[in-house]
Length: 137
Image (cartoon, rainbow, N blue to C red):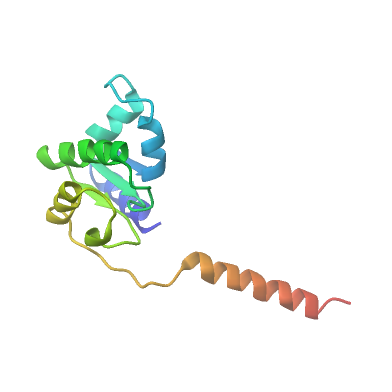
């Protein structure tokens, strides 16, 4: 959510292309093989600012490392800003070291409190349900 807020603010202040993509959605988009003809994938590669969400949730497979390396390295070489969101620090990502090196060398980590918003929302919902049960006629 914080990354989306950041993107919204940037688009208000600056012109340029911004893209937000979840890592699993990106991998699914490229699964059939990216040959440069898929406009959606090409737009992600060329975005002036890219948010790559939930990096680290993907499985470790050679083709995944190849796809991620192509994206991260391309943005690294072209000096395109990229925001990576993850529950895992860069050194803990289960991806090729060349990828983590490029991510680590181009990012400033922002650590957020490890309080799960989803867990807190679920607990509030449970409390509300218990209250309804207790107050039922």
